[in-house]
Image (cartoon, rainbow, N blue to C red):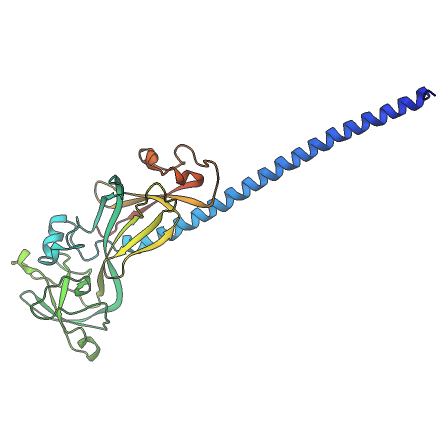
Length: 323
């Protein structure tokens, strides 16, 4: 028996409604999926960017104090810098190119990473100050300090002042800045006695060195900064600092894929460029070309494995106030 025409029409309309509803529903689901993917992608980007920013902030904070006190109590001339430390100048950091220098980094595979290592010689505040300058006799200054600790060590007889812990810095030296090494008396400051500090007077035999009361004593410090020299199989980069006062080369921050340093012609400003990854590694290449803010000259040296992360470039300029 044939279905009535009105009933057949009603069934056809219901079928059309169902098809239309399915079509609309699929569009809604597709839109929700696209939106969810976009939201997830945005969330991943924000997380990666925040992780990279935190790493950059950590490194810049580590460099701030050495940069602020770079060259404190030391001569600007590279040639004179080496001479004042003689005969200890045969070893680093006394043999470096002055108080601030940027050199190339030798990589494991024999390649050279241009401007990949930075060396900074600086003063470390002690909190102790000059109470009295008693006398200057030849190359020896006899002074009394408000306190002292094991960061400054005297040099036993017949030995050379070839440790950073042997040297003291003062900002008020006149007519010029000169480092001094402790000949004897490191423990005497606690008892109110005087310290014998020696300077290399042979470089200026006609001049007397003068220090002022209340000038703060600073210890001599030096660091060398660069990242790990990894090969093609390694994905991780680690920012290292070698403390020349002791402790050796230590990892300070991971996720740093590249670091470059630039000195202005007058050696008054140090600019640091960092290329840092986010936390998430992706199956596909995530960073193509040159990341915004990264020097194009170094883009071709970005490791292939590093491009599976989001890479972010950061830079900071440090004024070298004492250089």
